[in-house]
Image (cartoon, rainbow, N blue to C red; front, top):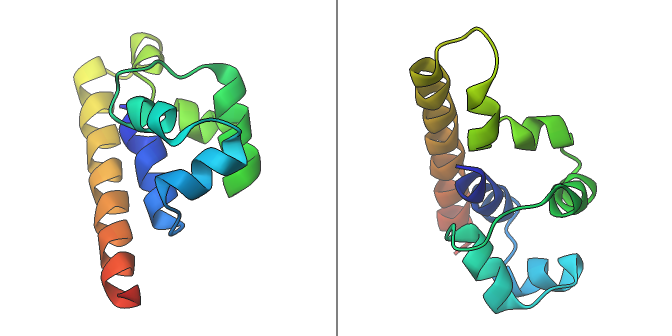
Length: 101
């Protein structure tokens, strides 16, 4: 799910993949693979997102599938909550895109 969260954050801020890839120091195609879930996300990349978007790394990690393996809250509940939050963020990003076009 971290890939969806990263894509949604980019869209929410109105950046294209090319613009964000430049800020991250990577190719657009590599960023595309990250957002589609084909490439894994490392801590270093999360730190860059944190700096660019002023979002704590811990908030980004919340969406990671690895975080779902720990804690006392049932995994199914965490997965549902994370999915709902992502859907809200995606809806806001789409709504903002529609306003600017």
